[in-house]
Length: 247
Ligand code: MN3
Image 1: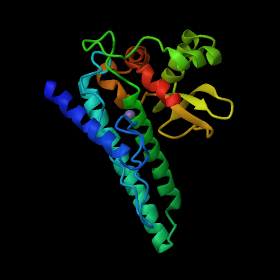
Image 2: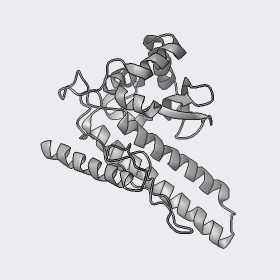
Image 3: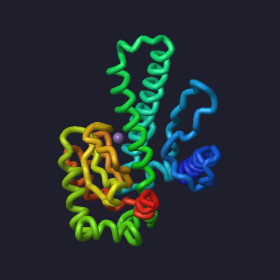
Image 4: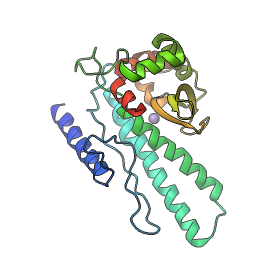
């Protein structure tokens, strides 16, 4: 899969370059999270695009398998990108025509697909090949630096935090996510659940670490054993990326 990895790296650099080239001054290392080209002209719509993965589809093996990653990224995430583009285009058409009879439907579609696009874009970047996997990457272990201090301050210890996060993830009702978010008002880290891609959200918070627990994220390898997938996932968490989301 050497080619694969090279292609992914080229795509990642290309995408990061586009993000960095819009005058934000973030350079080529900018996080690939949003399609952050500001509108240039009146009424211009954002075209959301699928960000390339910063690693190959098989890079998170054996914890997350290649087929799951490929389907998850190229089919599921792409579906949310398409759904968000469609919702925003339709809402723009409603503004033009003044016909808001389907406003509730398209507002929900916008929120659901927008949540899916943003959360998946973040999800890919907070994982990395595992220290204990064949690629000997940076994933897994315990955090250090500022993120480690804040986890200890707000949860008591890394172990207590990990237990709360794992329980939140394993017990999301139906499809959803577990998240560690930073609340700006009191600079506190909060563990919470997200149903679907957008429900149970709370407004004064920025997600910095998210775990997808929709069945599409684990079912091929883990079947109904969601807790086993959650346990395995800790081996691919990229703590440096989580810390950079905090700062
Ligand atoms: Mn997903």
